[in-house]
Amino acid sequence: MDWIQASLVAALFLGLYDLCNKHAVANNAVLPVIFLGTLCAASVWIALMALDRLLPGSLTEALQVDPLTWSQHGQILIKSSIVACSWVFTYFAVKHLPVSVAGPVRSTGPLWTFVGALALFGERPHAVQGIGVLVTLLSFVALSLVGRAEGISFHRDKWIGSLAAGTLLGVVSTLYDKHLFGTLRFRPSTVQAWFSIYLVALFLPLAIGWKRRWWARGEFRWRWTIPCIGLTLLVSDYVYFGALRDPEGLVSVVTAIRRSSVLVGFVGGLWWFREKNGWRKLPAVLGLLLGVVLIVVG
Image (cartoon, rainbow, N blue to C red; front, side, top):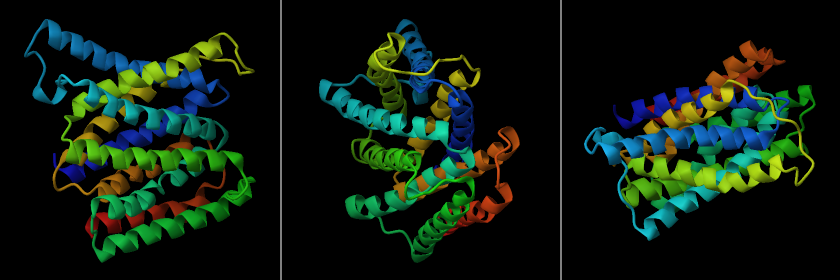
């Protein structure tokens, strides 16, 4: 599987992750959902690491986790910390926003990744790819206009602001991923395993605080989509990390393809959650897709 194909697979599972995320947090306490979903993903890697320890050579090379120095553990912990902050902002926003709005807003991440990749890694996408990023931005503006029909002011709504903060932190994480895989040459399985474990450690104090009612909070209801959050993201991140590790993979293009997951979220939002103004949002969403196509073709 080359890096473009891997990016497309990552996009499919990221779209499924968005839908599971929305279903799990709707009218539900957010922090337990984040913790349990993360714990599910970490449990898979803990089981694989234990199996490899008990039966050496039983796992394929792609699933093996390399031994790390303390410094390397610290580098992965930095990634986990960035993602943890991003998720707190994003999950609360997704709880209060339609998935057909939240998904497209998050899909603007490639625009900021594009800028960061130019500045930090010296990537030079072609002119057509630059046009694709511009189309993506214009489509986002069009979506914001449609969002007003649902009472969502993109300039004043605090949940849009929360989603924007989560998206920008996600961009920081993406650029850091390129450093981990492209420069430091970490194995994807190694990063994903320890990244998942450290996320559980970071969210555990918040989960305990929620359980002990250290602050006013909502009630939690178990949903079947909670473990699916961890599993779908596990698959998406695994193939995404592999695409970033490819020497030919441009982080700006990989991220743009991955964010085409907005189409899965859009269709799922209309079908599963019966969201309003679907047809009015469709041109903006298609514009986002066109931007992704231009970036890939370019």
